[in-house]
Image (cartoon, rainbow over the protein chains, first blue to last red):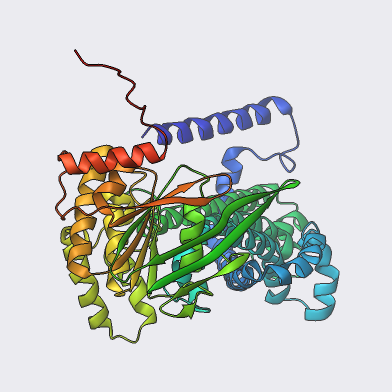
Amino acid sequence: MKKLIHILVSFALLLILWQVAVWFGHWNQALLPSPLDVAKGFGELISKGTLFTGVKASMYRFFVGYLLAALTGVTLGLILGWFRNAWSFVNPVAQLIRPISPIAWFPFIVLLFGIGDLPAIIIIFIAAFFPILLTTVNAVEKVDQIYIKVAKNFGIKQPHLLTKIILPSAFPVIASGLHIALGTAWVFLVAGEMVGAQTGLGFMIIDARNNLRADLLLAGILSIGLIGLILDSLIGLAEKQLLKRWGVIGR
Amino acid sequence: MFIDIKDVSKEYLQKNSTFKALDHVSLQIEKGEFLCLLGPSGCGKTTLLNSVAGFEKVNSGSIQIDGKQVLEPSISNVTIFQNYGLLPWRTVQKNVELGLESKKLSKKERHDIASKYIDLVGLSNFSKSHPSQLSGGMQQRVAIARALAVDPEIIFMDEPFGALDALTRLKMQDEISNIWEQQKKTIIFVTHDIEEAVFLADRIVIMTPNPGRIKSIISVPLARKRDRTSHDFLKIRDRVFSEFNMKNPDKTEYYI
């Protein structure tokens, strides 16, 4: 309840500040639309169906890219985390590639894969893959040795050692890695769609700019924030539920 | 001889120096014996236990169980740790089934065997709970049930009751003593608690640190269901105390 009040007050303040800026700023309406204009823009996006198709296209790309990254990142992370020697060889390259913005690869991606869904999917994949891989390797490294001892004592061998012992005990850390990667990947979705795509939220924004429709532009930006917020809360909830079932946090 | 430890030494490298955890230790243990390794920290008792259990390699000497050299941990010798080593994401039932999963058993057989031992340690009502919902004593009972479920020859216990409060510890001592009598396992039990050792052990192996050595071995020829307050119990306890030079000699020269 208290949280709800915080949220409402915070948004109300934002709206007031915004409206005040519009009243006293004397900017051209095409440069700074008022909250009401943007609300109308929202209505237009919804009634024309632009928003829905945009969200649908973006969601598809986002989830394909993100889930692929989660699957490969966690699997590779588990294996490389266990075989530390292999990781010592992979790690330097991973550290080299990690700080490169996924967008930097864009020219290559377009040359190799053309335009359409694929470039955006690949951008999201790259954005999510490295944080997931690195947290998983780190999580495996930090697995309490007593679990390994117990497993060896009870004759549990690979691959069961990975699936029965290491994955579950590293899971809480991996889950928070997945959570963080979701946010990072969402940021890059829009960027990925701003070049080369003909649908999606990123395209919607570029399209609004090209038509000099600042109201639609802001409406699009706000939708991206809103959806990102919703996705983040959902995965946060899922994380909490899973950890509860895992018996890691009290119920 | 069931367990034969011959002239075993083990050193750890510390910064610029070597720490002699075990120095020419020899010990024979009979099948079905309840043996306590007793000593202050740093005396090598846990190192000795870990070496016999196969978790650590010794630098020299040999350790044989049933005529076979110990090279790695085995499911027929289960270790119970002070911090229980339960898997927090598994329920009590699933924790106890853990060791059974690497044996060729059907799901139902696994379930039945696990239930039997959960029952034995008195936790039937908690089989669906997670370890985090149980008290320390209950968690250690789960670990005991998990060890017994795979029907091991030897159970190694590394200060298993060290993290429990005093009263729970006494209760757990009673229980492990009963379980030992029922199940006829060989138990090697590491402790630094003198009363615990006298209450539980057939023989107490007293170890001293720097370097880790066996100082003496004291037999405890008391009948089971031992009484912690009986005269004989206290006499043996006093003997152990004096082995550690912790009993002041009686200097009274005359009585009035």
